[in-house]
Amino acid sequence: GAAAPRLGGRAEERRVYQLAMERGLWRSTLQRPLEHYARSLTARPFWEASELPEAAALQRAFPAILAECNALLARRGGAFAPYRSRVVAAGGAWSDVQLFGGCRADAEHCAACPRTAAAIAAQPRLNSVVHGSHFFSRLAAGTHLEAHCGPSNSRLRCHLGLVVPAGARIRVGEEVREWRAGECLVFDDSYEHEARRAPSRPAPVPVHAPPRPFPSDTL
Image 1 (cartoon, helix red, strand yellow):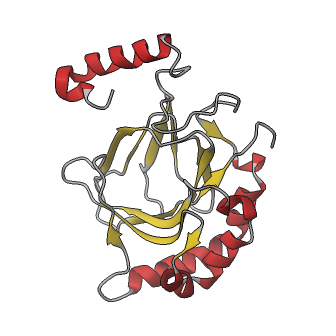
Image 2 (cartoon, rainbow, N blue to C red):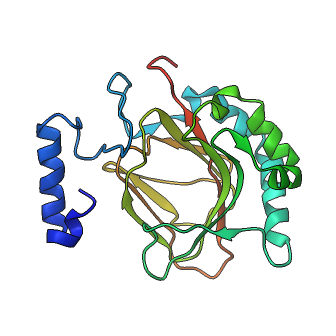
């Protein structure tokens, strides 16, 4: 499917996805994990933050997390590094500050953001999946992250909105939602998803984006 756009455009891409579903590779043409597919797990694009204790804990820590993110943004030279990805459409920019990746802490960044690191470390399920990572993420004004799917449905993504301008939104499957400051937006990134930030004059928006593992079908 990844090569289909180069070979025959969007219609051919969708035809390949439909064929893969008919042959039992996936249950939906919109949910296409690239590496691992656990069929026993509940499948839906979005989850409510109220369903996940970890999301509630991050929301309670919002003031501290926001303060540390703003400190990173205020650093001379900037702490955010460009995030290289083929899903960033031409003219856009995506950058991040990694805190945890693959269950390992980035010592320098965690030391610079101790309260954020502590809020994450206090939730064991946030650090129990190899595909997991936790980072401050920033989209420049006008950036479009093109439609793509994550590697596995054995985790959920949990985005805590920090500084969010009007019009910052994400589509997961066929549903579109907007980020809100202080609230967690939880979704299954094995579904096709894309994000957009409207052009504007204010500084790029930081979004705290820790994934949350979902190892079983029971909350």
